[in-house]
Image 1 (cartoon, rainbow, N blue to C red):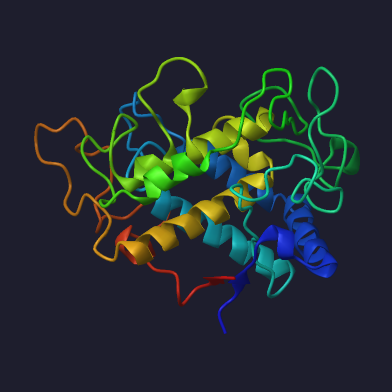
Image 2 (cartoon, rainbow, N blue to C red):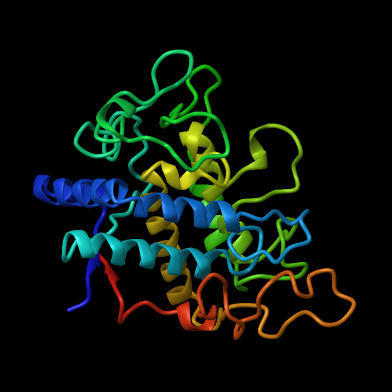
Length: 288
């Protein structure tokens, strides 16, 4: 029987404890920080001339599916059968309800530095941020940004992405104006205001603090967020069975994206897996 990823609001008290304990065990052994470093290393913007696989590229979804699967397998070495729950931010929108409870992720940051001091991932409880792009060694959150309110994605934003009929389109980066991948990842052409971020990106902004940028994995909500993003890809693919990963072939000579993105049959670093091999997950896990 394949493991089942559950909605975080449906976890029993024992399931919450097992998940948290497994995450803490990885942290104590230094393995959690290895996942943080991988994401930092592969967080490459489309203004950078290196190969992009994690963000601002067609492989955003299969890369994170593999990343999430590797993390889940590491958790299962600590607690057999445990899975990464998903946070459905279309329904669970309160900053004081799951997953933001003291027995799960803890709450928002306190004081001027927005330091998280509740829950198992507070600095005082031993959650030390070691791999970071800032000097902070503690989690920072500003859920919903009360001083300048910022909302989670709207149903209209997500519906617009889910209605897209193609997986991705040229120029295969953050400037794409159609296609499911960027519709869900959430880059827009707007330079100003809160409309710059939608869907996946907007959730990172709503959490704030540590969830901004390449070191976002330091906040365990990263995994719950991406578990839901992965579920949304599954739902979209069921609704669009013709929606295979694009591009099917590498960009041709003369393309600015040649050598900077991966085609459907090319391996995604740091693993020797292709986007095509990650398009289905039925034999690996399921969603409740």
